[in-house]
Image (cartoon, rainbow, N blue to C red; front, side, top):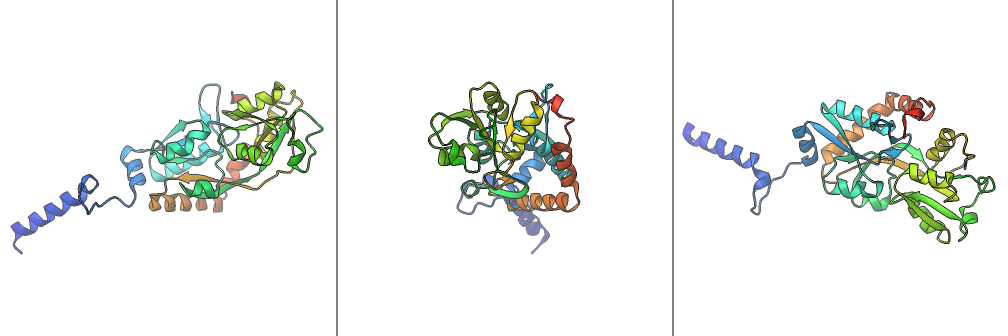
Amino acid sequence: MNKTVACSVLTLLLILFSSCSHHSGTYVLTSPAPVLDRIQSRGALIVGTAAGMPPLNMTTKDNRIIGLEVDLARALADAMGVGLTLQPIAFKDLLPALEAGKVDMVLSGMTITAKRNTKVAFVGPYFISGKGLLTKKSTLVDIKDPAEINRSEISVTALEGSTSEAFVKNVLPNATFLAARDYNEAVNLVIGDKADVMIADQPICVISVARHPDEDLFALLTPFTYEPIGIALPANDPLLINLVHNFLNTVEDSGVLDLMLETWFQKGEWWDQVK
């Protein structure tokens, strides 16, 4: 093969590989890491968050988003050598946004469930939670069986589109359900006596009591369920999934995750910053 032919072949190969994603024929070559390529190309990781699930994610009075998951997302972006963009989205719309490619991943108190896992990938868990109960009625705080509040005269609020909503509808079908867009709204429904009970992740219930010491709130001490919380990722990028898995192993094994958990769950310096 002479040099002219060799150069022509090399040029052709470069054109084919560089433009494979635009080829409309039978043999379409696509990147094995389309989402990771997208992140690196734009120079920023876009993370979807409800921005209202303290202490995992929450919005401050000056409209910053902070929390355990924000620290995790920032550390991941730093490890990838890119910037971080936090995209606040209503909880129920987070996974549709991920599937549509509007965000690169979701870190937002997302319980790993089989139903969700049929559509998106999960890495984790990085946190274990369970369904808890928040109320102003001391008679309800000692219940052992949620069936005790499965009555039409009991009004229950939970985050719309969450496993808490599914829990209410499946376990408490006779209770009056009030959907909430975020946890601030749900807690305020209980404080304002518009809801008898809020069903939410146990830590959120406990922290809500601490954040509102003058509202006579009570939290169930023993959660009803086991809830593994993970990072939701697009299902079509195994390299990104592997990267996030290795990153999470590193922050867990190094003790960094424990320090983050201590900061957000055991220290209350952030309470006065949140709306």
